[in-house]
Length: 216
Image 1 (cartoon, rainbow, N blue to C red):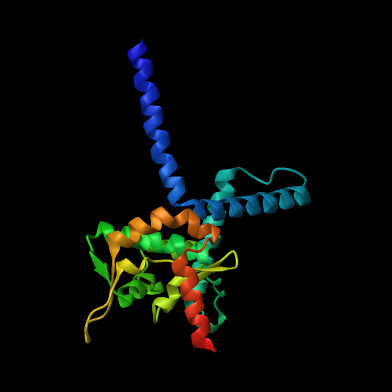
Image 2: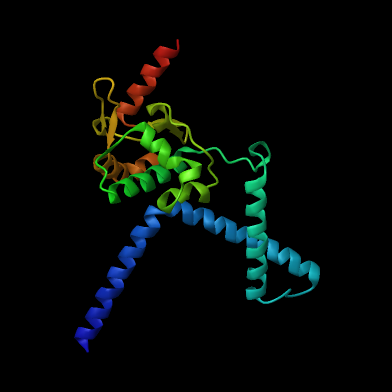
């Protein structure tokens, strides 16, 4: 009996740990999903109040929702780009979540190093699948990444760099510079909490001073 209890306790521990890791790595998506669920609850309450009670079973509502969504998706695809719903601006915290998903994807493909062009290709609206669909979930459209300045962002009013200098390897022309995937991902996971708080390192502060001098 004691052994069974200990096994169950260990199994609960292992399950809880794995769930905690998943929630931690996808906290932004979960947060946004909860906001959507809260908005749906308000919309449902509004319509049921106007109707005077429950409108119908969840299965019926869900089926009709799926039908309307398919219609919206088809209409969106057929509309010219100038009339499609504008996408939101990608913020610093969003960049962190996107970069982590991207690096984990490249790591799973055993990619040792990636170029800016490969990063932009991963973010391409036309090629999204798997982990890159996080961009669709966030409402982010096409992304242009012309330089490493893309990874310089502002969080809580402070400028922070989203990659470690050691992970960025330059090469002699015509070969492009590359980012070392595992080193960048390891650093990003380690520094994620600091970055989300917008806390600067001495390198961040030095970079800000350098850009300030160049702009004068």
